Length: 436
View 1 (cartoon, helix red, strand yellow):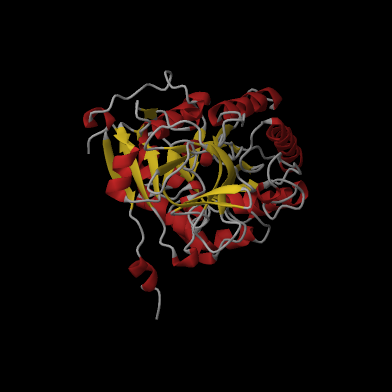
View 2 (tube, rainbow, N blue to C red):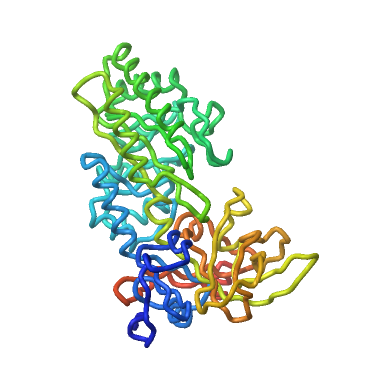
């Protein structure tokens, strides 16, 4: 496939763009003089024609750069991709080639990681209610298993698990949506300090090898404040473990959840910088010169900005003083606005024009709340236009559904003017195959 340069258009560079919203897009995003967006040196219009819409486009260069930034932020750390952000074998293989492992929380995610060749110390298995099948599969993969409840100690040992982490709930409320806070006292995840001490003691007597402690504060974390407090509480907990159990961790997993900016007005701490701040704080707080290895579990911050969703514009109308623009997707391919009040940005990807007003971008589903963007300034959209929504590489396709029997979109990986299908589009026949 030919990129923008090969199609007779003159691409501009990011630095020359007057449209600052391209900062939300992947590293390779450019717009030519006609306003056509290119990603990975391939025009969005060509991608939409070849693969259809809705379409999630991932930029390989951005994925690689972000993975390398994590490796540089803390060179000795274990960095594992939070697969729940987007389970995809091709992306897992790409990250594995860059030295990253995988953090999984279900049998399905575990199999995705295994298909990508991951196992052993590169694989961390989570879950607040792991089945016996999941524990047995984790044991077969020789993965690190994160113990999330006291009764899991014996069950893990019986399943053949050897090495474990204990998940500590440090009693910290992250500055994020309540549904994605994971470290407060009422969280369904992890164990309070007393329970965690008991789980560690039990693990040591049942033949398990407790290699460390795990903590996770939340998701879409914009600032490190609460995570730094969690680091202090982890260090205090480890001091208790040393004093009361004679045990010190070999590995301390500080989790992930680092945010990605989704609108031009958002200011977030970049994931690798965030991780670096946590590592620096941990080293200064740890009482001994012999320090455990650190681990991080970035998901969204690895893939979020690398992904752009392309939609085709359909109906436009004015209703009750609101100008509506309907797209050929919506809450079935990105439910985050409905679940968490997530806000997004968008641009027309096929042309440029003077500003045409403020518009509400609505999906095509039978819900009045199926709104992707409540209000955004755009050139006046027309049927057939292409809308590009940046920062949608994480927790969009991963959370997609078949509501209204809508087949889920395709995903492609772009680099150097080439596009590769990494997830095919579902069809109605796929959905009907489940019917009996």
